[in-house]
Image 1 (cartoon, rainbow, N blue to C red):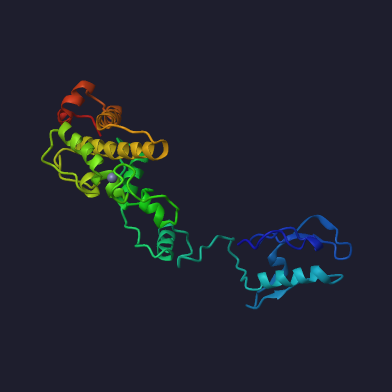
Image 2 (image 1 turned 90 degrees about the vertical axis):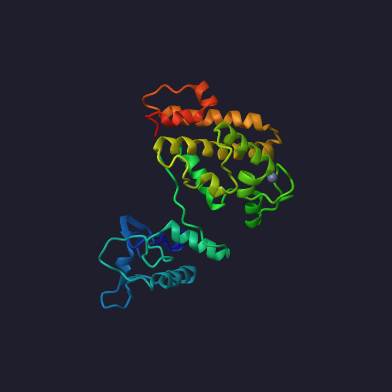
Length: 293
Ligand SMILES: [Zn+2]
């Protein structure tokens, strides 16, 4: 419980926090601070019978500004109910009294008249980096700071159009999946994996758990690493375009996706020596290997 900035300077009370430290007790006549003697709210408030009684003991009652500040203090502490248990923090916006980020997120959504935050857990495992897992989690929630999201937060922008194609609103789904320039990247990934029969047309197609390699834990993780590397690399190059006006080619991006995913996978491979050359020409051959994951 924090009541505010230092008050009562004219009579020497310096700061009061919680039930314990109200200030330094002053000599009632000279207003000189008595050595190392603290005054607590409990010293000055008797609430044993359920009614608060202030226990001031002035040799010379405060006057003028001091009296006014004393009156303010009495108003502040009057609702306090003293208990025997130690002080603790209580968050009044949740009935449990405990602070919960989930409750806070709901309150913010409600205040902004936004739809509730969907409950999607971050996917974590020992193969893929946590910062990438968080990026994908934000993407799935549609909470990347795209231009349409920034506009929702009243950020003044010249345009909300996609910085790559300049023809559609820039949402997470557009910039990571459906932008024509980005769709080329996904197609290159599918071609590289010899999976042209699959289609990546939504954030779910790209990042939700899918049935591809459903019977192979290694296959699932390698395929996931590839898709996550694709999404993350696209976002990285989107930012280079937005903030540095750098252009890129699909060939450059696919090279980086191959390198990034190989780095994540080979870092965790425990048994087989993974071949970069083999990764480039036939990534699916890694699925039958063991020791990844
Ligand atoms: Zn676009």
